[in-house]
Amino acid sequence: MSKGKIIVAMSGGVDSAVTAGLLMEEGYEVIGVNLRTWEYEAPACDTTKKSCCSPEDIRDARDVGLSLNIPFYVIKMEKLFQEKVIDRFVSDYKDGKTPNPCVECNTFVKFGALFEKAKALGIDKIATGHYSKVVEVDGRYAIADAIDQNKNQAYYLYGLSQENLKNVLFPLGGMTKPEVRDIARRMGLPVAEKAESQEICFIPENDYRKFLARKNVDFTPGFFKLRDGRIVGKHSGKENFTIGQRKGLGIAWKNPLYVLSIEDDGTVILGEDRETFVESFLVEDLNFQAWSPLRSGQEEECRVQVRYRSRPILAKIRQEEDFAIRVFPIEDVKGVAPGQSAIFYPRNENYLLAGGIIRKGSIQTIERILEGTDETREIGAAVLP
Image (tube, rainbow, N blue to C red; front, side):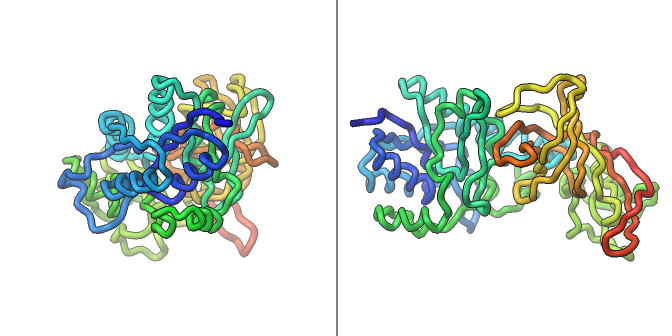
């Protein structure tokens, strides 16, 4: 007996192909859909490297559809992708932030817009090849970590609404990548041995600086300064740097220097490793999953993750009057960048409470002097732009 129709977002990779095949085996009427988000004929996309969402990937997704004998369609999403992902990516770098385009794409395109397309066709459910799970906690739905921690994509999925979470399936959440490839081989899928794609689909060369130049961004030159105001060098554009960056600064100093902050006038503040510890920061534009919105002034203890590959750290958090969350790390954390995402977990559970964007101008750092292997002494604090 059929379980009904379901749309599977098919990127042309092995993960979404196996997702479609598994759902067919479970009895769903699978409809494959590829989201065309970027015009790869444009000169700005000339590349010698493989990326996802390319014309080759569309052909691979079509071939998987033929192999599985399912309907397959390509939906044009270029305009929405430009507005929600590309434009914000460019504006964030111009504003001294470090953007997270995969979050925006998932929230507004892969799930937001695709669910709307599905509803228009009378289809309630969609599925993707993300390594993730959905759990129900006290009547609310939340993303939970996948079994394969090397592939876990919870960090990119905090923006999904309750309605999205209720109607999405992630068949790969309980599998490892090698297991997925084994299933692809068993199914005889043409992409079983296909290599993984780049993280940012519209920057296949993995050089965002070249991309910004192609978008005619006016780079803002300025000075490298230490926190005490001393000038230690010049640079050709603040857009070339991200918080925590050490390589590529071109500054000779007695100890390695790191980017601490990027100011609107082009000044890039540098500091040594001991100056990079973060005392607190604000997270805004929140989406609540297992949590309902907190009350102003309410405090909780949880775990916070500030980068995709980083380990969640223990922290105290407080709801501010403007609905942002102030985070006070209990464990040491460095390189917290405005524009990046922060997601919140319970102290001892692996599902998401909420997630949001780290606010520019909210990061308070604490300078430490190392006094041996384990002991530190706090010697000063500063609020970075």
